[in-house]
Structure formats: structure tokens, C-alpha cells
Amino acid sequence: MQGTVLYAPRDVRFEQRDDPKIIEPADAIVRLSATCVCGSDLWYYRGISPVTQPSPMGHEYCGIVEEVGSDVGSIRPGQFVIGSFFASDNTCPHCQAGFHSSCQHREPILGAQAEWLRVPLADGTLVATPDRPDDDLIPSLLTLSDVMGTGWFAAVAARVQPGMTVAVVGDGAVGLLGVLSASRMGAARIIAMSRHEPRQKLAREFGATDIVTERGEAGVAAIKDITAGIGADATLECVGTAESMVQALRSTRPGGFVGFVGVPHGVNLDGEKLFSSHVGLLGGPAPVRRFLPELIELVCNGEINPGKVFDLTLPLHEVAEGYRAMDERRAIKSLLHP
Image (cartoon, rainbow, N blue to C red):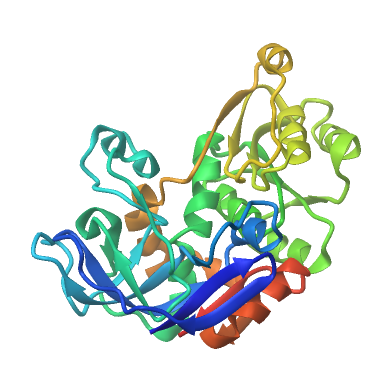
């Protein structure tokens, strides 16, 4: 098969790779219907996270099951499935508590920007749709593999409740879908922090009531001004930089919570300031598997359309352009069709 390999910063190649095979009895092989470029892939593409050897790329996926191992019981060939970016057994104590991305037997999913994918722990990782979906649903179903599930987790971790005022730091796909998640959970006011007009427009489509263009101290001041000096009841941190984390914490009122899902880079918290803020903090790699059944139902019923975050669609062999477009902020998120 052919797939995406990152050799060095900004050196993305689409080349021949070995076909995936069943290695463990719990594996499944999925023929991908769609995949995409993630904002977290850009940390490696830009050289901020090190690339020490040629690395197969991609961790977001959906498609048709082609083959399963001898121990797989709940997933069968021919089903359309979505899975998380971490494989999990769905049975260990951490999974049972709802934190599948900390499964005691977790395995990262790598190499999904390709034609085929081996998925370990298939029974615990993959969730099948009731029927084979129409093509127009596939972009939204693909988002459930990561960005929609991650935005949803940010809102859950921030304890968003009906009637709350929610701030969202970050206007990438995860931040925009954090807006959609907060809206779905009944937030009365949603403040999206964005400097980019197309992203502001989509944020409003997803339920944002206010847009703040400022960052840093000015951004915090703008949120305090909107909330009569109180701060947001809940804040979703969807970037992962030191500035975005400080902005999220300082924008949240005492007793509020920050759900942080941006992969941290250079984030060091001041324990004394956190202690005195009375702001709660919960986040990490999203336990996407926990939310898949509910989110699949919402998409299939037409109640949410998170696939709107894809504003560039390319054939898989043009994956390098998908990376460039996101790196240059010409695209929010690149959808790839094998």
C-alpha cells in the first residue's frame, strides 16, 4: 500500500509501505474511507517536536473492516467503524472509569494517513455504525476519531453545564469543535478566542455568542469585561502553549474549571498562583472511545455536523499540500481520501 511518512521537518512523502497484517489475535485490518491531517501533526512537521527517523503519520481514521484476528468478537468484516487514536481494551479499571487513553494496555495508533490500517485491541477500540453511512456523513464521522471527541472531552473536563458562560482558547479544529460541544451541552454564552475571520464565522455557526481577538493580558481583560469582571465559568484550552494555558487559567472565575486538551509544549504552571486561583484543572489525551457511541448517534441523526471543520479536501497522494495548507493557516483541517 501507499502511505505518508515524515522524514524531517516539512519533508512529507507519500510512498510505498508494507501492507498491514494481523499480528495479534485481537487485531483488525481497516480499509480507510477517509483520514486527515491533525493540528498535533504540525508539531512534528514544524520541527517543534523532534523527528529522529522516518515516521509513518496519521492517527485519525474511519473505514471498512476487512479482516479480524481470531480473538475479535464484536467487530466483523464489512462493518464501517471509527476508532480512537489510542487503542484500548475497554475493560481495564482506567477504561471502566472512562479514561480509555490511559488504558493499562493502550497502544498508540500510528500510520493512519494511508490506504489501510492495523488496529490493535479491535474489540475495545473500534465502534461500528448501525449501517454503512452515506458519503456525506463520512467527514463528520471521521472527526469523532479525534478532534470532535477531543473538543467534547475539553467541555466535559471543564464541567460545562446548561446556562454557563464558557471561554474557548484556540480556533483550530479542536477549539471550534469545543465550541460546538459547549453549545450542545447547553452553555448560554460561548466566547471564542480567534483572530481569523473564517474561523470566527464557523465558531458562530457552531454556537459562539462572542468573539475575542485579543491574546495574553488583553485577552484576559476582554473576557473579564464581557463577564462583568467575574471570568468564565468554564474554559477550554485547545492549543498547548504556555501563553494559551495562562490565558485559560486567568480567564476562569474562582470555582470554575479548565479542560485542557492542547498537547503541552513549554507549559510550566506556577503552583502558588494555581493554588490561590481556586480554578480546577483536568485534561490530557482525550478518552475518545468513551464518547464514540453517543457522538456517532448524534452525527447519524443529523444533530451535529462537525465535519464542517474540513475546509480542504484532497486525494491522499497530495497529503504534503494538506500539511502545507494547515501550516500556513490556509486551511483549518485537511481531509484526505485514499
